[in-house]
Image (cartoon, rainbow, N blue to C red):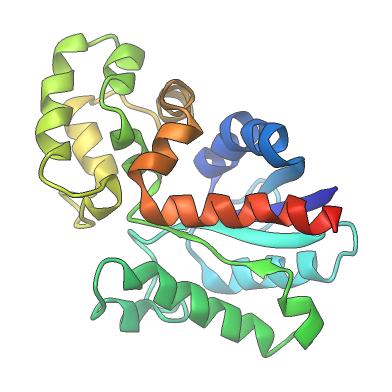
Length: 225
């Protein structure tokens, strides 16, 4: 059985993994996935790369875990993250891949060739809330405002995929949602909506998310070999 730990940005991502993604992944491929926010317990590491890197390396050096992955939003990511500045000039599809490769190379410089094989970096485009645009009926149900679905639909049709919803302080996915629902709270409403949407729908709608999920699923197949 593969045991995977995800170093994540904060409580929303941790709750999403614990309540939505981890049970689904276990049922599909018998991969045990847990999440740990970057930084010291009780103190959100946010998008601080040095804290995230320290945790990644510590977990890679822990034989209990077979693999280490990440879940950090591209939106709001500090320029200090490896590859972040370079990613700004890339096409949408290349942005997360650029950062993930740079993270892998940076961690590789401090761990051995065998250890780096257990690292599966992932960057969410542009943030967790993008996944909630995979099915626009979920949030209106959670927020008890069915008429707001039209507003979400109007945003969704502007983009080929939810992952392309852009990342300015005004137009990032979370900012758009907060503009419709002033009382929206990420760890509560976001995760409740994610449960309604389901991982299968997110995979269908979000190509880079799909690649990550498929990679995690294959870790269970490796364990069977």
